[in-house]
Amino acid sequence: MPPLLNSWFNEYHPENGNLSVPTDKVIIHQLVEDIKPYMKQLLVGYCGELNDKNEKHGHGKQIFASGDIYEGMHVNDNREGYGKYLYCDGDCYEGKVNTRKINVTVKVDLHMVTAHIMMVIG
Image (tube, rainbow, N blue to C red; front, side, top):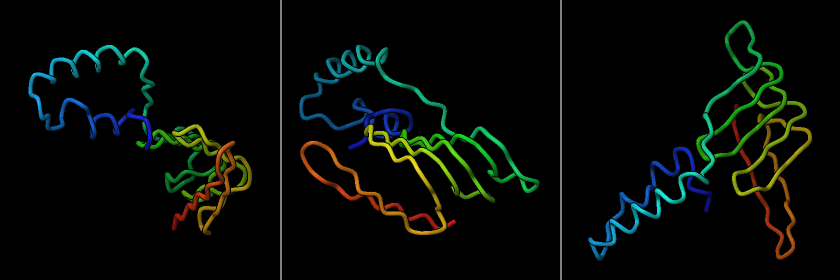
């Protein structure tokens, strides 16, 4: 599950849920206020070079609502070339990127091997 930041926190805000004990709402509100200083707020969007059609083209940085961040090369609005993709869970892929094809990245941690499949049709 991704961390509760940016739009994820707004969509799944703890105070918006149904509680079995209504008085717990006060406690949840205080917990939310206590963690706010530690939450990372990111501005979702793209900052970088554009082509004549106002498409991402060249080097740029894209921050997604999920908290994932891509920084690298773009060609005609597609991530293509060398780039670094930082997933909100802390995993990272760095290398050749081409979102016009299916990219399969195998990530290894100390406890298990997981396969992340990213399919983007540009």
